[in-house]
Length: 232
View 1 (tube, rainbow, N blue to C red):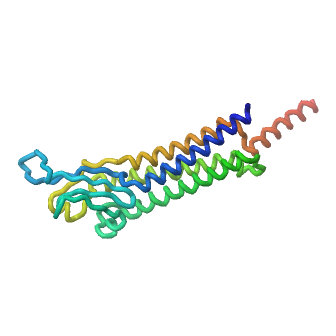
View 2 (view 1 turned 120 degrees about the vertical axis):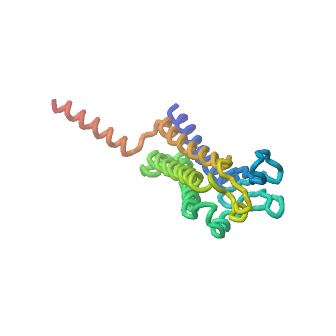
View 3 (view 1 turned 180 degrees about the vertical axis):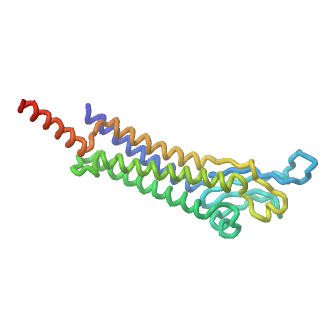
């Protein structure tokens, strides 16, 4: 019964890590970390918005789509890195690259979790680091790095993207996205990935497997207690 519970938990840990990796990868690949509905002040005396005074912008970490009427109103792709380099007003380069690095590290630790969950399913590891202690560590690292990714993007959003997702030439002719921008589903995917790794830590606890170090410590305490009773 105990072995069955352990096996089920290890399978869940494998699936949780896989889900975390998939969610993070999809999050990075999609173009909806930020969604905005910018407007243009065509007539300051009228509050009614016309088609020519409304736009749409959605951005991922690599590219996005923009539909803002400057010369024409056709949707056009936005390459985020190029805009950061050209304009310098879209978002902080340091924060942007940090989000990518920590998301990538989260994927790496997720892959390590999958490898070691397979090892634990196939064998009974001798070394502590390949057993339960390793599963705690790999999931904790994956959870930590994806959580840092979430925090960094929240900072990036609040300091840069919330106030503006437009180019200088668009701002120059009256377009504004201030208070009309929010995080999109791509961001919530990385939040879900963090929860997957957090659940994995819970599954390691539920599995009932003890770290070798803890077992040795407990055995040593019991042995000392027995020796004390015998001496008495």
